[in-house]
Length: 343
Image 1 (cartoon, rainbow, N blue to C red):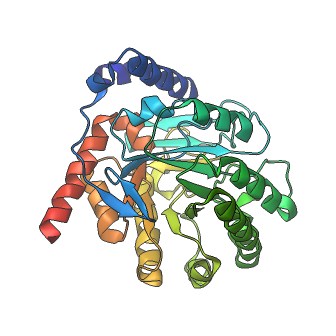
Image 2: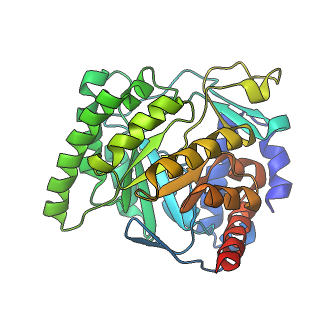
């Protein structure tokens, strides 16, 4: 069905198409028509971070920033759904236009800037949902919060989402909030993870459950920076890494319309760069921390390549824009074939 809808959506502004697509998925769910969008894949049980996933293919953060469509998105067949990024206070994000498709490259550029209704609204939405599967919640800081106080924003979000999340992702890698990526620097990250680690232990005692805490990194870090991060992540108690966020590198799309727009580039041009970071961190960590591979998955073979590079789970978002919900099952089957071949 998506092949018939996509030409219409691609005639619209990218952000408007994003909103309309979400409403369409919601409408199909409410009408009981979700199976027409894509057949649900057969289970491929996967256990990571102490959590049981019905399959290892998830929705990346960014599509449903406010957690308003969790039930509808889950019916598409994802093994897990990640919502957000959410911030302590509502914020409008960057001025429009702020999202562009590059169809010739199966890519998207966005500089949305953590536009969301705030963490309180997200929690209310999640509380209304009936979804009982694995739900990740991605947290960030408000753009007007200085980095010296960023830990306060992340801690506040962690405290608010903790009871409702299966796992929590600390997003310090979006290129669309000025200065945010500076939090990936070794000393800043050490302070942030120390604060969040202490908060997580208090929350675990209060709620009787220790929820996994994950970190999402950028693909644009140097080898030396990645070396430094790998050395401190295990000691910091991080339960997993998501590799990677979008890139500011434009070398793969030079000369394409909109290629020079500021923001993060996602989709096919990101695949090689993100997968190289994934493979490098897998080698550095030697299996000590599970990894989620994201960035440029447009086919089942891409998901299998992420797994070969060291990913225990995979996610996509831009792939959903270009391929539709059928990509979910295709990726599950590719990972199933890889697993069977290795058995």
